[in-house]
Image (cartoon, rainbow, N blue to C red; front, top):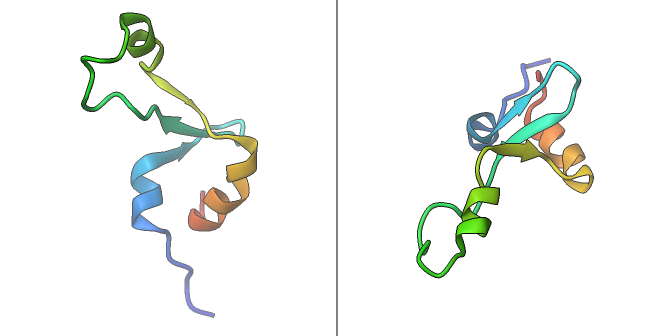
Length: 65
């Protein structure tokens, strides 16, 4: 059997933690920041965990992770 390919977009966006959970960056912090409150922008910092509903599709994009 040939090797399975990893989706390039997924490998750039997600990392699998040692516990098996998948880490992702926060969205909505790139532009149009003037209309967003300071509290909202502060809470968009850092990274977060992928939603439970999306884990299956992301795991299929990262077959060796």
